[in-house]
Every structure is written in C-alpha cells, then in structure tokens.
Image 1 (tube, rainbow, N blue to C red):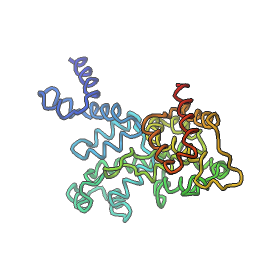
Image 2 (cartoon, helix red, strand yellow):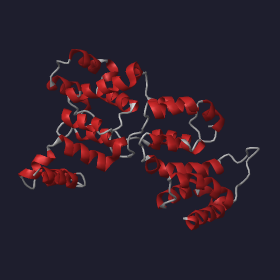
Image 3 (cartoon, rainbow, N blue to C red):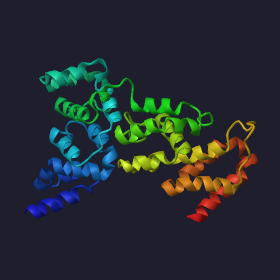
Image 4 (tube, rainbow, N blue to C red):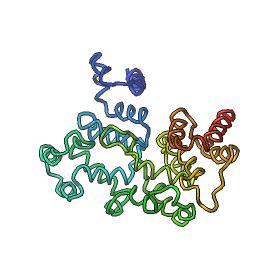
Length: 314
C-alpha cells in the first residue's frame, strides 16, 4: 500500500490542476492534503526558484506550515529579495509583522485584519505561522542583512548605475562585479515570475534591469544557474535578445566610435547568448523588428540577414 501511495504522489505532481483530481475520490483527496505531495507538485510545476512565490500566491488554503517546511527541506530557494517583497507586502515595512515574530501570540484573525486593505494582492492570505517560519528561516540564512532598506533589485539597479542601455558601461559592471556576485550567489537574488497582468509578478521595468546586466555581462547567467535559477533565460529571453540588438544599433548613431555592424558581427555577438540558452524565437524576432520599426529602411536588411545566420546555425 505504501508503494501505491508513493506512486500516486508521483502522478499527482504532474497534474495540471490538482483540485480537480482531489474531487475524484477519497484517496486522491488524501493525497491532495499531503504536504509532501503539495511540495512535490510546486517544485515540479514551478521549479526551485519560483516554488515559494507560487506557494504564497495560492494562499493559506494550500500553503500550510507543513507544506512550507517540506518545501524548505526539498531545497526550494529562499532568496533575500523574496523575503523583502513579502515583508513589504504583508506590512513588514511599518514593523507590525516584525512585532509578530517577537510575540508569537497573534491569532489568524488579527493577521487577516492587518492585510484586509490588500485583499487579492500577492501574499495577503498568508497565515501568521507560515510568515513567521519564513522570516525565521531567512534570519538563519541572512542574519541581520535581511532587514536592509529597499530591496535587492534596487541594489542591482544601483550597481549597474543606469536606466539606459547605452550609458551603462561594461567597465562599471566589472568594478561592481563582486557585489553583484554576492547578490546572486549569497543573497540568492531571483526575480519573481514575469507577468504584465497579475499582481505580485515581476514587472517589465525590473526585468529590464536584469536584462541590461546580462547583455553587458553574460557570465551572470551562469551564476544564476549555479544557484538553481535555470529559468533565467526563459524569463528574460525577449528582453535580452532585444537588448543585444539595441547595444549594436544604438538610437544615437552620432556617437564617434559607432560603426554599423554587418550580419557576421551580429551573429558572433548573439551566438554568445544563444549558447547560454537564450533563443531567437518568434516573440524575440517580433520584439527586435518592432524596436527598429522606424529604421527598417536603414538597417532592416542586415538585421534580417543576422536572423538567417542564427536560424541556419541552429
């Protein structure tokens, strides 16, 4: 019977909608409420990098204390940025939830009232015991560093020191690379999943900060993969491909040293990112063409030739 139960958990983690399976019969209902099964489903569907984000998004009816403990035991990535965002969302910015950690005696209704003004926002439905557990685990990992003002994306933006792809220099990134490495390797800086519609997901502005850094310093991708964030290429694919072309074809072509690249130069530059796992797919091709829609007569031919070389290489 135990073997059959384990087999059902394996089946469960591949199900698209586990609630529908839970309604099938009592046996699957039991599996649905098993913390081990829920954690396996989260990790399989979203990966170690985004499992905690989606667990919080699903709310207290899914994320129990036992489930979060299972996720941590199975090495779900608890990034400092995740904790910073969670504290901000749940009221930690004004100290109310930090006080909960010290008292440990506030009931669920008190916590729910704290978040009533943020209903339907990411994290609003988190239970007190789960929040406290996450905070305590973060303190073990990051000690007092977990309470820095702002968040790690703000710090990354500061280190890359620009809101413009053109004015961002690779030399500046080289100077600050040790701090950037610390953010990734030690503080586990991982963006939330991208979305343009739903609350809590990462916005385009934040992902552009990430993409700019990658375009100027491609080795950052390997650092993210090293900590288990293998979705980095998928999450920023279009922005990075577009960023490469923007770097090669700046909007200000009056710069002294700029020379219009040919398709071979573009191919060589783009191949670095293709080898890392980025893809010249339909979405990124459309993004590049739209970006240069006003300059098609000038550079459209060489861009199309570069597309051809990449597709031919594939």
